[in-house]
Length: 160
Image (cartoon, rainbow, N blue to C red; front, side, top):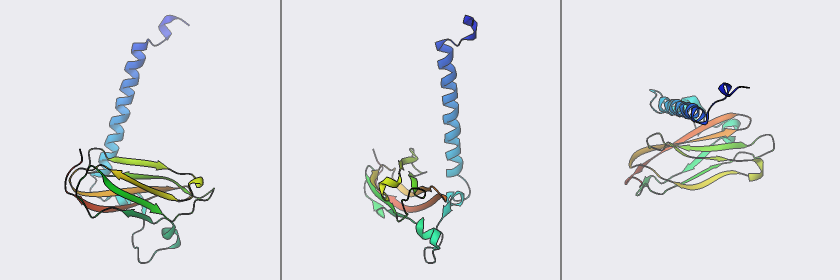
């Protein structure tokens, strides 16, 4: 091969940065479309709509979110996410993701599970901006796809 057939290091870095920037812009635009859509983000996922009359499938995929109704400081808002889903070898919760579309940092965390975890449970703290917020939790089941739930809260002071 001749010298002309190879990328120089500078050309490679330039191409990689353009591709990286392009993919970042596309992913942010995708989140922006979901966040600012005229319809609610819950429509894109399976969700438990009526907690009074649950089907067996809905009972299995019910996402419990515990948040304070009012958080006095957005720097450390406690959140607990749990599910009573089986964690069997061929049927388990693969991941749980926490999102807040009204915050500059939308993704608050993604947590991966295996059947060895025994249960799908997260207890953590997240940083949030002040004001009204709605936290979305997306749980991915290995058999039944992605399920979503949300909970609203008010944050008195924004996080640092």
